[in-house]
Image (cartoon, rainbow, N blue to C red; front, side):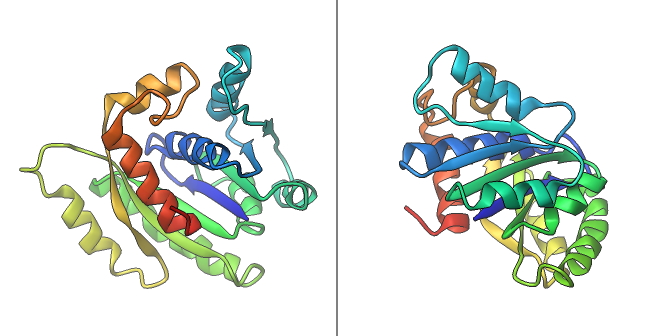
Length: 212
């Protein structure tokens, strides 16, 4: 199963979710490969940090560019799960990765600037269905302010409902310091012991992978 995290805008939590979901799968004894196609290489840096400190489970990660779909197909028969971090931008690499993805995950911050990018991603989704008709597309509300007085998440969900081909994940990924703390030391939020963030990742994993 190939799970692709991508979107037109940077800074929405794609690397955070890709690394935490890869770690979740690995701790469930699943065979997972993390693939970094973002030139910034943040997921690869995270995985290398795990190797440097011998953190278990070790999570293999490769950095690739160019014809992503062809390279992913080579890995697909070797791993149960492939999690791809595409970074931000409507790039040739993202478009290539879409051709081989089973699931396309779009982390979206609850802001108008992020909503403006959804139209182009929906166009890419429709274009991709011509060659990859089974791909599912999920919008994930990410970096949501913890202040309950703000209703930005509700407004964003309402706006996303105008895209019938995009399913909205039933979880809010809040803007927590623990996500940043975990990334810095090559860990997941579960591994640093944040129960609320861990619950968010578990809910997201249950939605995407159908596992508890």
